[in-house]
Length: 459
View 1 (cartoon, rainbow, N blue to C red):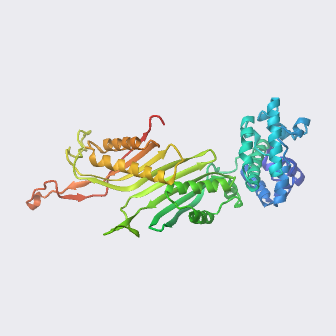
View 2: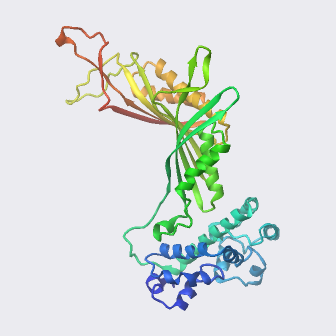
View 3: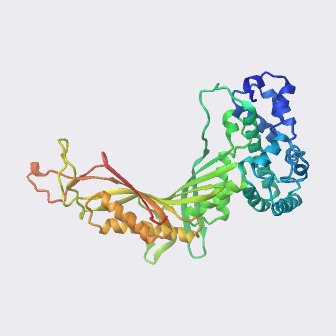
């Protein structure tokens, strides 16, 4: 039978420890030190307070907590000497029904793990089956001691959460519940100059960084012990840029997300969005200048890397790419009703500021390949716009997307948005003049907005 949270808030210290001491294996000191934080409005707040106590403990106490956990399929399990919680958890993972070969695998892995780290392998058995646990051993054996200690504590937090949820019944006393959270640093501006002997390379990025993970304590109780400060995120950009040439936005975003995931076991995903301000070399009588640049047009190159512990997705793109053609664009045969005033036309100005985002089928590429693919895709979009006789913005957009997928086999999908920036012929009749399709008024709004998404058939 579950214990109510209301009772737990008023029970004696011994009763509190008797209930909450079971959440962390053979470590009642965690519950004892959390008593002073009562009352708790939710189970999440209780869990956060208990986790705060673990985080505030010394490294020796944290190591003792890890060592309090039994080996999986170890001596205590064979002797039936596990706690009731551990017994049920190992049974749920299928660890009580193993072949002799599987038992030997666990024995060998446990021995190798103890030899390297000096503490037992801890994993939340209720979230894994025996196959996943065996697969995790060699991956975690590749970690260093500090990262593996963090990983073990993160797994212990998962175990404690499940045990707490089994034992405590929560009354509905809150108006809302935290279902998703993320935080990060935005608009981190970076200028990177690479000084070659014969020329300088220049790249300017604005970066947004966001993390997801076990940060609930900061929201629920103000505990910031698991928070990677956004100031740290900003400084990481500059520290990594000192060693990374930032040869492409994608490669640098991949390096940043890898850094945050690898350094922090409790971070489940990291996302970096980058917008590049283009600069082009000033041309002189002797060719492109080796260290002088001028600002480019309104377009910006974009990319986003979303990395979780299962993998990452890389998207590229371009925004604000101004395109205009003075002919070869028609629009007619559209639906008409009593509110329609637009006439059919066989010849109009077609102008837009293209927004395109594309998703790659790989995250493994060199900086040069990321740059080549950007040039290929952007060039294909521009060429189709210029040469295609347009019967509608929709038709031209579709052909542009098809061409981008054709020229770049590493492309899995592409999204295109094309706001129709109208140029309206001016009525010159009041001035006794004829407009021969040469004088227009430029409008920015209202405007038509057309969007499409294309996915490769074999993706």
